[in-house]
Amino acid sequence: MTLLPTDFHFLRPWWFLALVPAVFTLIVLWRRIEQSSTLNGYCDPGLLQHLLLSRLEQTGKKMFPLILLALCWFLTIISLAGPVWERQPQAVYRVQESRVLVLDLSPSMAAADLKPDRLSRAIFKLRDILAKSREGRTALVVFSGDAHVVVPLTDDTKTITAMLPALSVEIMPAAGDTVKGALMLSANLLEQGGAKGGEILLLTDGFTDVGSAMESIRQLRMQGVSVSVLGIGTEEGAPVPGEKGFLTDADDSPILVSLNKELLAELAQAGGGHFQVLAPDDTDLEELLKDKSSHRLDQAQNQEGVNVDQWHEKGVY
Image (cartoon, rainbow, N blue to C red):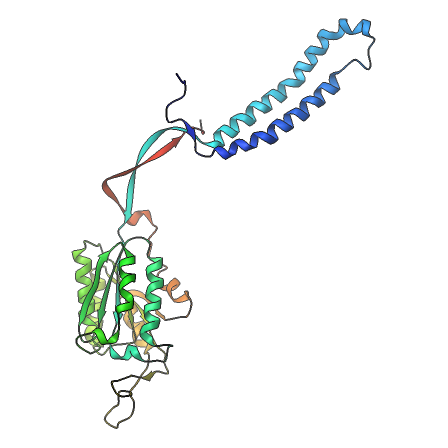
């Protein structure tokens, strides 16, 4: 029969290694006290028996601090080792932040002013965003002439990552460059998912329905949904690939598509979000995602009926 609880153990038992220097130090100090207390080399043996009681009393007084030091050292090590034997249920919290990623799949995303092309670079950036989205829920919507849901709101970002290689300009059933439908579709996903507010992150090189897009963005902001924009492309622009060479205008000249940073920045400002131009490193994402508090407890909600047991340390006592 043991006097200790069944679940008694130490969370950090490696702290008991600190007993090794403790024992060594105490032995050294004890020997010094013994050497300083011996009378054999200084007192006549006939007188030693009369002084023995006084010697023991002095030695005992000198040993008391040593015993106190050993006791304190031992108790400190036990405390640091984390003795536990009781579990306490802890509520599990889940971050409810919701983000819809909207990717432009219009023909202009095949332009090669970014190597190898705009769409490939946008997909690379999507992978980085998903890697940073470790909490909350994420959805993916694509648009060209119309909008489609690729993946609805999910907390499994690996599902979205697995879909990225299949995305191309050619998969869209209707070619075009209108974003309003994608914004409304994103808003519906957030509403159906029970999200309070949420964020839409738009990856695009521009679109033709600027007026209706601006109206939709302002409406979304009134509903608590922010819209941020990541611009894909350069101000110098590039021709748009077609079935035979490049797309041309009425004069048979290649159509150049360039990035209108001022317009996209204005849209992001109206949506209460941020605007950045795609960068080769993470500086663009640091700005776009800096206010997204995926680690703040005040945006987390308790998962009803879900708890984990946590050991309650007794070392503090």
